[in-house]
Image (cartoon, rainbow, N blue to C red; front, side):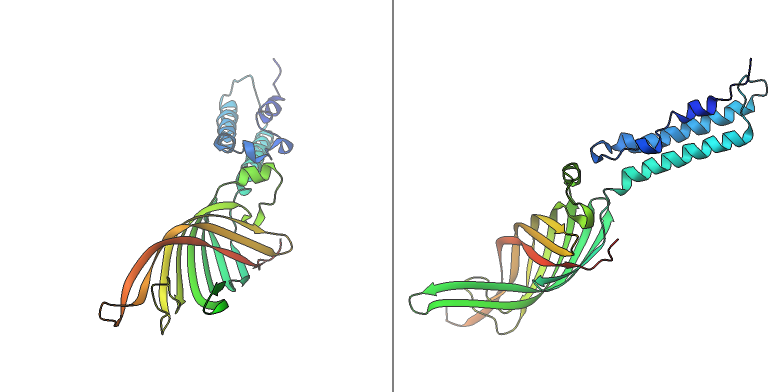
Length: 263
């Protein structure tokens, strides 16, 4: 019987060719990612055994074996890389002009990030009263916020051919925000003479869109709990300061530009 020299080619076809590596995120599941390891195991198990039997019918020259094994490894790693790199979150630095400040988002895992921002919290309003007529106000207070974000709709946006680069996705997040302000938190309290910390923690849903022209939109809305010190009058008509808290809305609306280097 003649040596079966085409066996390496038969083994090669057990693996997907470079052109057949999955590109649709909808099929990039755990079975697709783990398939690379199965192929590597098959290659590592079969090729050595075919050479260890001296009287075996199948015979492969040593250079052909190494070439085949190299192809197995290369194709499997390419497919594995394509399956994993598409859904990674990105580190992003942004400058915002609505709520002016600077923010940094750090990717900590696939679809997860930590977001921190130092900014000037913007508040404004328009009102009317019979005694004062039309009134309006706008003020800026220094603030800090930290968020844990989980992005969840990558596959859907990818399927619709929407932009997903620069974490342009929807997310759910936990929020811890501190604003340093003199303003009262309700009509029953008085405006403070000095800035004090107003803390808010809560949960929110949001979306972020970072466009190719560097424009950035980031909106989140949810609920939380606010606590701070407030000034009011006691039963004797004296001003007193006490700790107060109440349920409130939580979230942000940011407009700005991302500052990363374009790839």
